[in-house]
Each structure stands twice: as C-alpha cells, then as structure tokens.
Length: 206
Image (cartoon, rainbow, N blue to C red):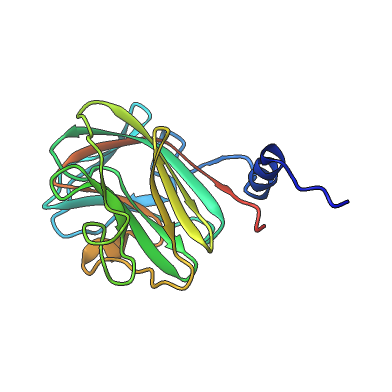
C-alpha cells in the first residue's frame, strides 16, 4: 500500500528543497568593498563607520550599488537596517529576478508602505503586495528576501510581509532613477538609514 506522507514529512521535504549554501557576507563592516555610491541626482553622502553603511538624506535618493557576483535566481538575501531620521524609505532593496529587476519598498509613501515595485506595471502602492508596517526611528529591523522562479517572499523580523506569485508575470522596476540601483542596491528617500550584516545564500534549484 502506498503511504501518504504526513505533515511533518511534507514540511521536511519543502525545507530540504529550499536549503541553501552557507550565508556569505556582502559587507565586511570596514569598507564599501564592491559597493559604490549610486549616482542618483543630488544624492546624499554614503559613509562607512562603526561597522555600518550610513545613507545620508538625499534630494531625494541616496543609495549604494553592488558590482560583485550575485545570483539572479534561487537565492536569499538578509540584512539589518535602522531608520535614523526622516519618515520615508530607508533600506529599500533593488534585486535581480532572472533577467529582470524588482524593488522591495520598505517604508515608502510617507513611511509605512511595504511591497514590490513593480508587478505587471503596478508599483508597491498599487498591487497586491501592498501592506503597512509601522517603522520606529532608531530601532534595528531584520529583513530577509527570497527569490525563486515561482515566488518572491519577504520577512521583516519574523513577520512575512510579501508572498507574491511571479510565474508568468511581468517583473519590472518603477520608472526613474531607481534603475541605477540595479542589479543589486539599497536606497533611502530623503531619510537617513543605516545598514549592517548584509549577507546572501544560494538556494537549491529544486
């Protein structure tokens, strides 16, 4: 008789299929390394101090872009970020999705909107990934993003805030200078943000 797997077995299979390599650092806490300041118009200063990358308020955008090797699919990236002053996005992440790019907006449109820009031409304020998250200044938050061919999933601390099916959909960036953050980059909007513990890992293609 064919046995039906129980819930624990199914969970173990799914967990195994998403198992990845060890986490690899993208920031050594001492220098920008393979990051550089993103050439946004009227960008604020980018500083490395006390083990942090600090994005000073820009007019409006300040950011950093990564120039090293990075996967385009089947990966996770995690980081910690703090909004120090201001009330808008402070650690927004632009990332690759196969041959396309997308942005995980964290605290946009006045400080509390979270979501993906863009899916099928609709940005984070307009598509189904839009949610609200209350960010406090001078508090560190943990962010984690997972990208697979079927889905983009994201967590803030331990709360899942994005769970979007992307197979067969159009994934793009918003129009404007955010394209300068590609293929991988962070940005703040008229806000001072700090980053630390930026790491990634490759997931099993299963």
